[in-house]
Image (cartoon, rainbow, N blue to C red):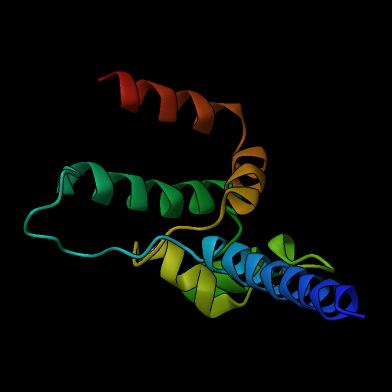
Length: 127
């Protein structure tokens, strides 16, 4: 009878650690937020350039957009999937450089923007 309580506690601890692991993975999916750190090792210019690149790639990917709002609406429609919904407000934050999209969206943006955008990104990193 003494083995039963320890087995139950093991099952409970595994369920708890699994749910905590899922919570941690959700936290890791959140976008990188632009912060100003006095003691940061990141070059502020590099971070700003990376954030601006996403907005430029979106404009290149959707040239039919006539305004920022239209760009955000179009991009949200194109990038939303059954598993992940993208709102126009989120896209607006990407376009304005307030934060960056998750890598799953970066891939889609690169595909939409075309090979030239990829080569421009590589050339910018080499310079």
